[in-house]
Image (cartoon, rainbow, N blue to C red):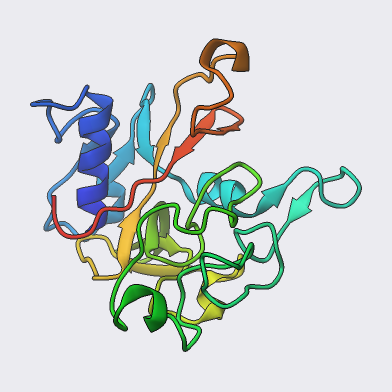
Length: 217
């Protein structure tokens, strides 16, 4: 899953899915062989995007109730500064990462778990799996041809899941442990209009939805 794949998916969502174009919409795409990251730009009026680094980071780690209501950031995306072992049944601060014992739950030493497996380990804004499972692309230009990725993965140790863990990868490349998170920039209705049961949470004008895609679109 390259950064190009992620932006094309966002374009497809933005354009209504189905047979909609993947080449225009939320992003203007340059040549996929062009290593210059500025050849991919978010357009004004976009409704679906690959999360910016700030959008991703705040949804994962920020908690406005911390510090007696002054707000602050957790070290992990589970409203915690520590992580338990990756047992989704017992750990309220668990995540699918390499703690040396995850084979018990995946059946092997190679694989992501279904989205939302850690049902008790969400961020303040209700997002799941921003720590562990798969690294996720964000829009940040880290260096040279590299775009940002955050959150760690099933085969990475705890340090990669921390809020301080910032990584990059060549935008045209991909990896078996790398996916992305799509963000909707559409206005969020008042709670009375959509019901508390909806599986989305507001973050300013950002609504994060978990999208983990493995392979190539």
